[in-house]
Amino acid sequence: MRLTVIGTGYLGATHAACMAELGHEVLGVDVDPDKVAALSAGRVPFHEPGLPELIAKHTASGRLRFTTSYAEAGAFGDVHFVCVGTPQSADSGAADLAHVDAAFAALAAHAVPGALVVGKSTVPVGTAGRLARTHDVEIAWNPEFLREGFAVEDTLRPDRLVFGVATDRAETLLRAVYAPVLAAGTPLVTADFPTAELVKTAANAFLATKISFINAMAEVCEAAGGDVRTLAEALGHDDRIGPKFLRAGIGFGGGCLPKDIRAFAHRAEELGVSLAFLREVDAINMRRRDRVVELARELCGHDVLGARVAVLGAAFKPGSDDIRDSPALGVAARLRLEGADVTVYDPEAMDNARKAFPLLGYALTAEDALRGADLVLHLTEWPQFREIDPVRAARLAARPRIVDGRGTLDADRWAAAGWRFRAPGRPAPADEEQ
Ligand code: UGA
Image 1 (tube, rainbow, N blue to C red):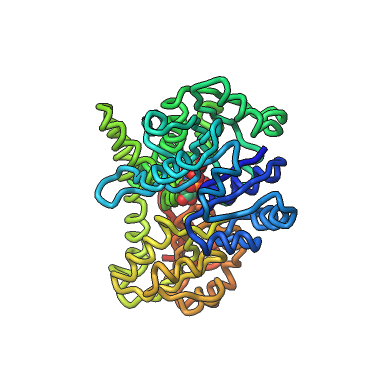
Image 2 (tube, rainbow, N blue to C red; image 1 turned 90 degrees about the horizontal axis):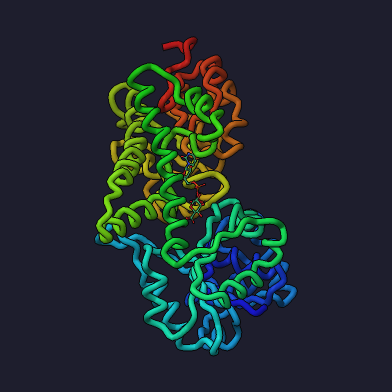
């Protein structure tokens, strides 16, 4: 089939490449000529494992092309996927739909009769219905659930597909698009527009709630002297709860969970439904950043003024160079404001971090960051940080003091190497020398 993908951010670029991998002819569309030029040359302007190889393969084969022209897109595609961003509005928690509205309007103006326009962007419930009433073109909604760092895998082998459709024809077209994925046994849920839109926001709200639940338990553990890592392990053995998304620490960040729960609460309130618990989910999440700052102060005496702080991690999670609403950089910036001399190291997100936080210091390697540090903060759990030898790290640092904001380091091993070790939700190791 001939498909277009509107928007070539991490969702759109991944969707375009994966649709080509499924055997379709794909035209990616973006208003940014630089992005189009980079992708056309097989270059991916962000870190996503497996994606550069797929883009290079299919731009070379001719099955995947990119353009800035909606007229070209309209003439090309049988099915158009809208993958543009829905950022948080500046004045409220609501989603800003300017890009979605512009993309649907442009496609409606240029699409050939019979084309199907499929929304994939995360939108407030009611958007698909409104667009269907506004534009003289058939619409469907097909939310995405891909995670940064696993975007290709999640697109080619998703947990489920959701088709929000108003006609059998729309469902048939979408079944044809995803035929190989469905043939592999992927569950399909077909739904009306509002339900399809809600699946996405409800899923992200549930994941955020699960993380904030375990982080609230971390607060209780701190007050009661318990250990949240052991608590989470024991909870996770219950099949009904499961072990995933129960990692307590510095909280969630990124371009999706934080903005999506705010937009969802806002939209529900517009509809007369209170989702006040999502405000609390948000508040717990932000408090975890405060807690890491408190632990940093505690380890440095009373404050961090003049302390040399090494921050390991800048991306909002490992496997990504995305720093949007990154808890790690949020904490790093706070400590700098409090007078610390902060040096950050991240394996992938250095360029993005430097652009957004030019006043922080940056090291070329983790070792360089550790050298001479009065305090180390482990804030993004890249696997290579787990490989750091605490004995060698103690020789590099000026003072062996560390906060494990992600709860993935071996506390006993670090304490045995002489480190004062603190982690949110966990007691200090028993044999630590004070
Ligand atoms: C999230 C969802 O997981 C995807 O299903 C969804 O499609 C995507 O948003 C989206 O809306 O586009 P993503 O933002 O890539 O994906 O990241 P996650 O893997 O969900 O992690 C989000 C944040 O939660 C990260 O900062 C991570 O460090 C944190 N997290 C995750 C925890 O603090 N604890 C956990 O146990 C799990």
